[in-house]
Image 1 (cartoon, rainbow over the protein chains, first blue to last red):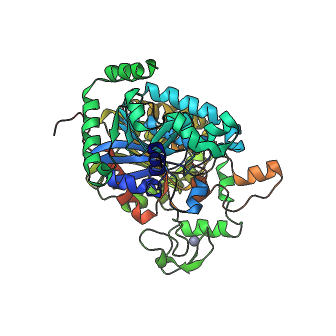
Image 2: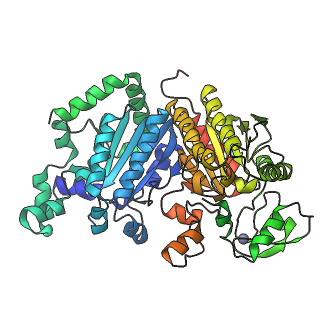
Image 3: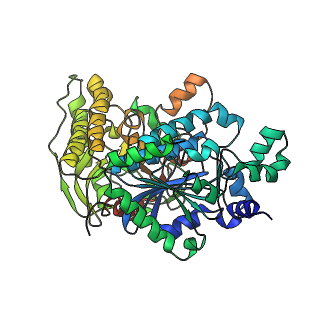
Length: 252
Length: 286
Ligand SMILES: [Zn+2]
């Protein structure tokens, strides 16, 4: 197994499939909000209000699920337009209440379904990216496992973008890449090597801010790190934060 | 919306019975749940007035609903009363009757309340005051609820129950939707939270305004939540609709409701939400 393959295996590990467990580890008093207030409640996006170190926070996460039934319902963690509407709704609530936002990302990408397409998948992602870049509250993203394409970026236009040691972030999934480049999804391994989707390379490109060792998930130190990072972001005024956020994306 | 139409959700057989049940009933009487049609002795619904079979919360007066939620309440604007702006015939007599049935001047109870230790601005609509229909007096009272909450920096909780616009007040009734909505907007601009709790029935102009403008929308089990009356839709599209059409359970599936909360758990659930909303912010020193 190459280093890249090891990272991908770790990113796709079943251990990371249930985001509720991770929410319980990091936050207290999670009050889940359901639905897009228009048409649907997408289980692939889990969102709500909670506390981090006794301070209020909004949490938005992608969910894959631990069993086949959940994974079918979430399309293996691939949100539909309603999921992005739910996400946007909770981000706007955070803005209104002046709560910082933490997003936990583990998605191969937005769901590539015909209904999703007809319901404006691309337009919803566009809207979320645009709105997220304007939010005055601090936003921190932790890429937990997979982060593929615009479907992931729609949750990651943030002030701080962190990746777990075994996670991946790329323009699309290796399977999708192989299928587009060589019309053969089975060449995913070859694609993955070329795609440069590992945290260490991305950090060198300044495409992310920080790599989090996996052990920090279990030994409690991730919670401490999140608390101090959010605290630091809150020390800055919103104009400074927004200028830094804009500069981060401008450099590409 | 014609508020009368929404009552027809229940079979015609149960409507007169339901109305009878809503009046003062001596304890021990046999009662039928308008939702699941289970029959049981009145007392079995307990202090929270909930169907022992399906969990449906019976329609009760706002004053009674308040007692199920909190003991700490300072009432606001209790004297607001309609002036019959359209000079609708026989309206004042109807108002008097509703007033004596509900001990309210019009169809909403508002004031400052404590949920656990959290101060909130609380509104409870009364489904037994001309079907909780929205008129000038309860519309004004709700508007002032949001305005006072903005001044006093309080979150707002409104328990909604309404057949929709008050037909007797015509255009004045319609205008309440915009008037209350702008007070909701101003409250929101101040960064304050608004929680609505959908009770049975929440329909028409109330659904199409403040009931659906909250940051967090909770609901009582089996409550009806919709805009157009079921019968009107059926007649328009020439098709029978299922019984759970416009149920909050259905609304939850369709992304309209954040959580369905049994009546006896509402105070606790609100307190848990308020503990987040009122937690010390990040910028504040310890
Ligand atoms: Zn029942």
